[in-house]
Length: 493
Ligand code: NAD
Image 1: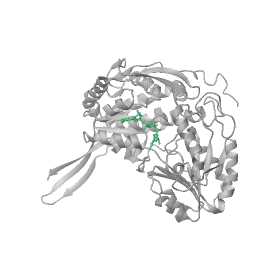
Image 2: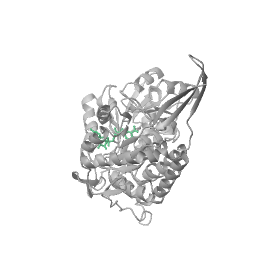
Image 3: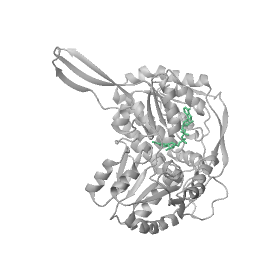
Image 4: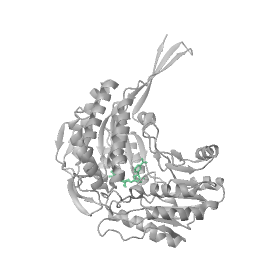
């Protein structure tokens, strides 16, 4: 392995020192329970943090409420300037955001640089800053029944947003939420995963440095109890959550107590379809290296491979070279493309899918067999085959470096298999015929369908899921609308 030169990442051991919550304009010592945060690649404790107490959650919501009238009254241009200034501060802090994320999540640096930092700030937060300026008023014009009137439809911020995120992308999942919420004129209480709280605690410093008005963005940390308090708080108008479908269902119930709206970005089991005629030699490596990135800990990992009978054997042969290129280990090594699982319980769960597949007839068709590093919660990537469509590994989100492959006889069967899970987050169709590719894409029940690999998430396009993959959408104008109320103003003429 070629380790990165020492000088390339001078701050590679850097871990945020902030342990205080941000409530209004105050950095507050946490009064709730404490826990250790680990580097999953080394198993070392890198921080001990304290969570918010119930009173501190209440204080954070109160601070967001107090800041709401002034923030929502700013012009779009003024909010845009604030958000751009915040993006400037984040850009300058990229050299510290990167090690913070790599050391607490274990994302390989080659992936983290773009996906976790640069894309999040340069593309998504900047897009939101520009979207703040949009005049969304709709002039409906005249309506003459029962008397002549004119109507406008205007959009207004919903109020206080609880933004609760999962562990796998601590910065960009937060930006997807607070970018749009701030642009819309909402104020925010941010709660990261307790497994990866450090980047968000550091964000608290950067919020102050950017000079955002106090209370517009607040940071609390904690576990399920803090999440529960926040999402059921009567002072919260909308809960925007990214995480598992099980917790998503609880959040919906908790928010229901106040009839607060929810945006839920949940898990997936995304199909990756190879239709007949496709040159599998060209695509096999890209497919395998994509579903396995971030160790498969991506909501839209295209890890359910549906491959036409006619190219199935050739696809497996071509895929062997991808598995040769998979490097599991030190996230700071530029050659590494598979990092660790976040915690030993998750490592065991993922390994359980591999070990348990045989009981349902499953076989390992491709695998990495190199010895794993002695330390770190790593799992060697595996492609499982020979499984029935109702097998656990085919139906459930694994969230690790494990893909499943199923052959199909004709395109209608591929569409049926693609839609045969409770999820519907993303999909991909490999097909040489653009008309057929489009036809198949339209039959798949998922929030994003890529054709021939598509690209990445774009800030102006919606992202979200059907079925158990979620409720509502993030990003683009569709994401903005989640944070806006709609008002009809009608006057007689
Ligand atoms: P998780 O559901 O275990 O936890 C997410 C957050 O919920 C954490 O902050 C946790 O503290 C909090 N929480 C737990 N119980 C709660 C409760 N009762 N009330 C309120 N909050 C509570 O998810 P995770 O393991 O951190 O993340 C992985 C999951 O996230 C995967 O399923 C993945 O697919 C999904 N995900 C989805 C997207 C998307 O955009 N659709 C993106 C990334 C990750």
